[in-house]
Length: 413
Image 1 (cartoon, rainbow, N blue to C red):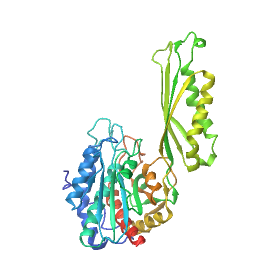
Image 2 (image 1 turned 90 degrees about the vertical axis):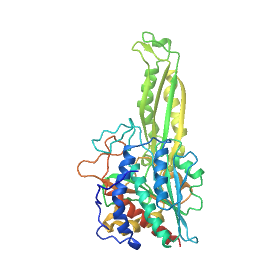
Image 3 (image 1 turned 180 degrees about the vertical axis):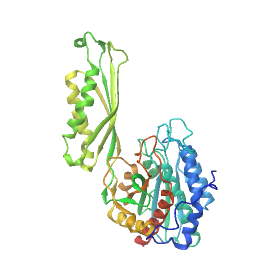
Image 4 (image 1 turned 180 degrees about the horizontal axis):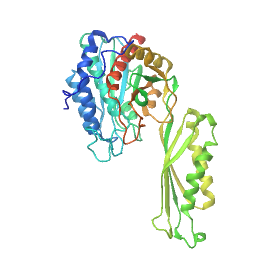
């Protein structure tokens, strides 16, 4: 297990204007900060792809066990659910962290650079995991003192970055049983440390995957009239379909179809018999998301029909928009003010990014907040191989989520 003996805490006991955590938890957090930073760096240097987070889950389970808790692994062994049992007559609230990494090569020149070729934590899930471990350690202390007014369920979720979504695995495994509210954080490099982006209503977009395969007899480039020119058909697909699809829904729905991969042929003088393109469809509006599969299918077939190519379209449902509950945002607002001071509360826009936290909100109310992790100098966006965070965000996130749990439990009682 990593140690943090050489890492000094870089966050004060409480930011200006904040309230102290109860029962001297600020002092415990200060002692824990070096170890938490070391844990984050260990996870960052040993990333695991979606669906294969076995070592990360094992690390999480070990740390929670050392804190006196009783975690259980998900059926596949790549995620963890852990209840912190307070007063038995209290409500149950859930806090979720995602633990998977992305298939990118880490290009940062740092001691904790990824040691796994082609895999890195470019979305901050290592921070989410570490924050939630810190929350578990502190809330376990409150539970031991008999001062936790209910039950807090920690969810360490796999496979947020792929389809099918890992949140659905958690739900199937009983992760939301008895839960009254659920909360989560996501790193935001556009906000400085000490600020939290909050928004009532939709905060992310829906995100689906679209794959189109075209087939034809193939032939000689000298005689395209005797075959089906799939390269031409593919060109029409990727240039015409996105614009036409966006014209089938209201402009304020924010529908965006972008192809990220296209492939056809292997020789300059051979018309191929197969071609394909795949991409994502993102849309801000729930109604437009519901109608998107039918619209995309119709437009693709209308565009390709004159070429004579055969169309095979795979439309893979991803995730609806994350729609934050107003009461849950009220809890997060109060928690942010308590944890980070009044200046910690920041407005945030709806983004075109997708987040499978949305599936939890189909079953119970809750909210997703954006945790400021911005570094000095130019910020690097999420999903870039050079992405990194200001690690002072870790204790800030722990304070926030501890306060969120306490505020939520008190609000329900």
